[in-house]
Structure formats: C-alpha cells, structure tokens
Length: 423
Image 1 (cartoon, one colour):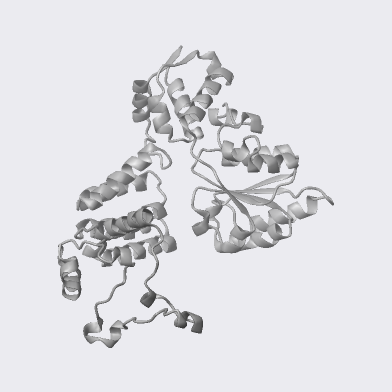
Image 2 (spheres, rainbow, N blue to C red):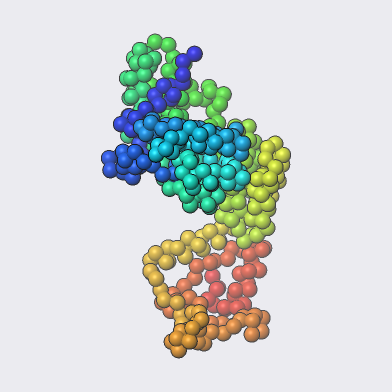
C-alpha cells in the first residue's frame, strides 16, 4: 500500500516548503538561524497541518544532526530520559546538539516537561516543540523561558492553490490521472488552511472517481458528505458544530446543546475544548443574569482536567444543560467592549489626583490621594465621588439588563448614583 498523498508530498528542503514566509522566507528569523548552522531551542505554535513537523524534519536534515522524535500522547517520563541519555552518549565534542522534536508538547504533564529542563538548559538536546494550544497556558514557565516561540499561520489561498497544483503535477500517482481543477472553492473552504487536510480531501475525491478527474465544488461536497468521518475536529465542520452548540446554549435550547455536544464527543473532540467554550459562554451569554454559571463552567473544566473521558461527558452535559436553561445577559460583554472602544477613542486620560496612590512624601506634596473619600467610612459603604477621568466623568459603559438577578444590581446603582444610572 502506498503512502498517503500528504506524506508523499512532504517537503524535504526549505525551498520546497510552502507558507510561513515570515519565519522561513529570505532573511526571516528561522531561515537565518538555519543557514547559520546553529539553532536554539524553540516551540512552534500553530493550527494543525501548517508544517510544524515538516519544518522540524527539514531543520534536522539541513543541519545533519541526530533527530529524535517523541509524541506527547504516547511517551512518558522514562521515554524522555531514555532519549536524553541516548543523545548524550551519541554526541561528539563540539558537534551540534541532537534535536529532540516533541509533537503536541501541550499534552505533556508537568513532570514530563520538568524532565526536559536540565537537558535543554545544558544543551544536551535542542528542543523543538510543536503545539496547537497557547504555550502560555500549556507549557511550564521554566521550559518556556528557555525556548523561543514562533507562531505559524494557517495557509492562505495562494499557498493552498500552489500545493494543489504541485500535487496534481508532481505526484507519481496523481499526475497519471489527468486532474483538472475546475473549481477550488469547496476544497479550499473545507481544508481550513490545513495542508494535510487539503491533500487528504484531494486524495479522497480522486480515489472515488475513475478515469480523468474534474474537480468541482459539487463533487467535493458530495464526496465529503459520503465520508463517514465527516466530523473533523480540525476542519470546517469542527467550527460549524461548536458554533451550533454555543448558539443553542445562547438560545436556551438544552436538547440542541446536548445533541451538538454528542456530535463532538462522537467525533473525538478534545473535552478541554468543549469545556473551555462553555466557560466563555457562561461569561459572554449568561453573565450577570446568573453569576453561578461561570462558577459551574469553571468547575466542569476542572473536572474534565481531573477525570478525562468517558466520565467527563457527565460533567460537560450537566454544565451544558445548566447554561442553556439559565437566564441570559450580555451586559458585561457589551460593557467591556464599549470600554475598550472608549479607551481607543480618547487615549490615555490622566487619573484624577484623589484616586492616585501616594507612597512617598513627594507624591503627598503633589496632592496625590488628596480628597479621596473612603467608602467604608460612610453609611451603606458608599459616598458619591468621581472615579472616571475628568473628560469622561459622565460616561456610561455598563447598562444593566432587566432580568431578576441583574435588576437588583441595576436598582442598587440607581439608588447610589441617581439619574446617572437611569436608562
């Protein structure tokens, strides 16, 4: 059986590498480092199918240095230590450090990441990590501080079209099929900027046809609908289904929310992704109408982290039903966006003197903090004073929405501030 098309077309040199010109184009940072023959440890962060693994392999080939690979999904601390020991024994004096490539490094536990620190710090190995998740949240700080971070982007339309033309004109099997790219809208859309996904779709469509092949949008859609693996957690369907899930919660339909959640679970979606989106929904769509929603969403996320599949489905379902059946408010969401827009429009307004901190005598002499009224010294723990900059002192940003929970907050503000808070 032949290799998959994506593997057959994997670039072997930077000249064949498509995309990421901001990193590997002429004069770009990674290109200069590679051309110099010495690289430091770094982490590649980007969506699936943009060339993270390929780039690591090209670098190892270019530098002619030993290349070790570990998958964070299947490797433990012992595997890490074995590779480090092997790299240490096999290295000659003054030779470039062996490269240790760790795919999906965000899935490494803290102890696994800790086991890398010494070897990276002493230069026993040069670490190249690849991740689809934000390293700030998923990679421990000591390891992150020892690595450069490079962000890879989804491939653009021109990159994907170039890859399609390369595939049909250079691949040993496809060039015999006389393939015509009559329409490319659907295949580009479903690929979602993922080179591997693009080539998988092309291969699926070509293999489903006999004789010459004319690629049209209708043909691509028809073949993908027939594919039993229609849910792709990295492709367009992924975004369509999570969108339907969040909109079902926002629209207070628990049945639909559970249905779309089940579609994601059956499709192999990462439970942390589902939980993370529910935390966002609790803040964005439910907000102050039911502040407990954010607490429950965070508890569900924590539970998912602790227990994993299959039991995590129960906590996720409980949270989804609770969010869908909760009253809704987006007042906090609208308020922070209004505040950000106001800051961009009005610039850096000075802090009123009475609100400034005065830790030194000089600051006190300049009247920092002078006139500030401590609210706890007044009845009801409130006294009216100005908190906004002078130029914005009458500006309103938060507008309470009239659900039972938020109505109490709104009425308290009216009692405190009077006409300023009367909508």
